[in-house]
Amino acid sequence: MNDASTDETAQILQAYKQQYPHLRIIDLDDTAPRTLQGKKHALQCGIEAAQYDFLILTDADCRPVGLQWLQCIANPPINTAENSDFAPPHIVLGYSPYETQATWLNACIQYETWQTAMLYFSAALCGLPYMGVGLNLASSRALFRQNGGLNRYTQTPSATTIC
Image (cartoon, rainbow, N blue to C red; front, side):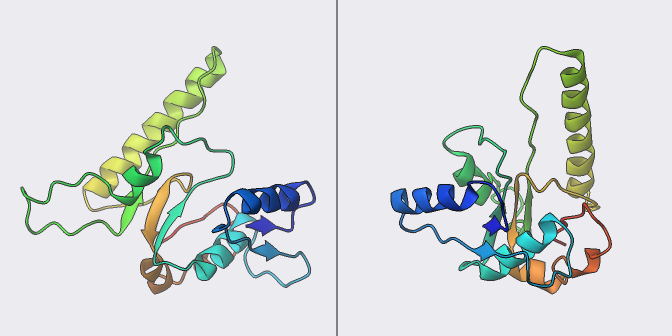
């Protein structure tokens, strides 16, 4: 997705397309009217243009923790043998720690990020989800559409909620 960038994004994407022919580039220009603010417009356009129903979201400045990251988020380890009533999740919540640096501020940021994740993971496990971090998130496009996409967040600058 190239969201009307003014840097070298278009050239970088074209270089990736040469290396990965299956890559599909979506260019958004800044002249089209936008009902959503910031990143939400690009997310909405990307989700609508997706060819498959299962969506995995991350950010450009995120580095996967390992080579199996995509496989793990697409197929979370769920033990259905113990609970036959359990249906696979509609949303997979991920965690994205900040890169570790040897500073007091970084330690505080790491702790706050971990604490926030534990709160929203715990609430979700109790059936009371209230948030998820879009850096590592998976969901079905059907669920996204069923809940009105991002349109109910037109006045919220930072919300990129799926449901």
